[in-house]
Picture 1 (cartoon, rainbow, N blue to C red):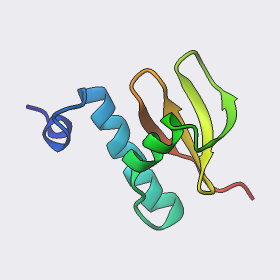
Picture 2: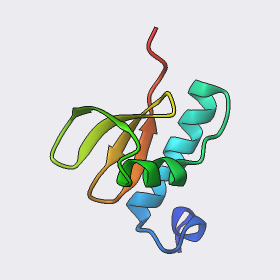
Picture 3: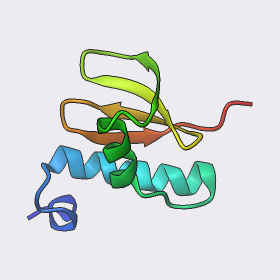
Length: 85
């Protein structure tokens, strides 16, 4: 079992890797770790502002003032984007 699979066994290895990446980027870019599962849930529930579509499965949203890249196929947050200056 991979490191990522042991963190969230209900998700694929790719989805786990994406969520771990998003957590690390939130610490790096925002100075705090955000709940990426809650952000993904808010996007699925329609409580986000759609910004742009990057591909058939990836789009950018704003949730609670945080810009995120969301993978619609896996239903996970891929990364946290830096604050726009």
